[in-house]
Length: 429
Image (cartoon, rainbow, N blue to C red; front, side):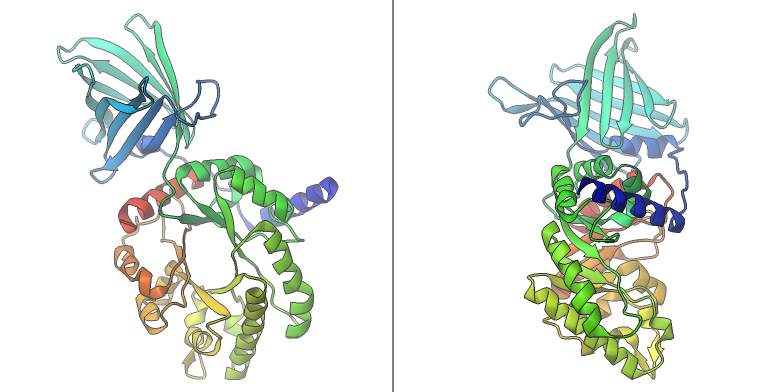
């Protein structure tokens, strides 16, 4: 079994490397680097580990504000009665005039302070604190071990070490936000376990894959991958699967490929399988459309019989016309609602020039999954009115809201952290 796992993993890496280019991204500005510090954090057991106690000694809330130019920070400390009380309140912000990071705050003893500093690199940040008389009081160094792990150290004016605290991001999961792992594909190929741990800390509740191959996921068997995801504090709920029978023999495809895929995914604990169609442009007749609908109905019934949901995922081609009928509308009208659901890719609908709200209202309760994607980092392009679209969650029937990022200005793991924040704080209010 171990040898089989290694073979699957090697094949996955080799096949994916040829189809996905490696690109280096960075966080170059002081303002954007500061955003690494946003989120809900808890202290590690000690500074040499990223393990966290059930009741951590410290909790820190760092909320982005003013168009992401500042952070509102509150630090709570556990007292002898295991209750948390506030010990520090602070505003940290980016000043565009001086290209510097400033801070102002006070502690629970009534002492106020200011701070000034900057990032010397993407991962290293130093602040010089002063009292209100202008006297230097402490230097604080911040070292980001990754996007969910930061170490703080305090030094006095003589560079004597005062304290050291390691914070681990611990964003809430109460809004059930998922992520399509294509967003962090290169990271998953390099180190799936560490990548999943960061996603879980960012606040993601579940993952959707797109790499089912040879009965496994990222080189793991279904059971092992399920365990790896759950160890990271998430669930493996969805999988994009791709199989289009070249000979159009639906029964053979279902008997040999889909049956096995369904059993493999049941072992992994998923709740739904999704698929898409890369051959839309080659469809010329209504009969071909109906053949696909019949095929999807058969797969959907097989999934339902096995306590799974079957979902069709759109790109832009589904909104082309065949014999005067829009492909997507035909699929919606000629698949059985008991067997076939739909996954609205909001980005691709926008590319095609259609409004997802029209489909939510016309075909209520069919769209149980959304891919929330933009032309760049989520919410940054200004082209898609996500806030309006999210008003129609109920009528659409959505159960699975997933972030997806494929056009980056920053490292992918940083970008998907921003995507979670945008969905959590701006869209799911």
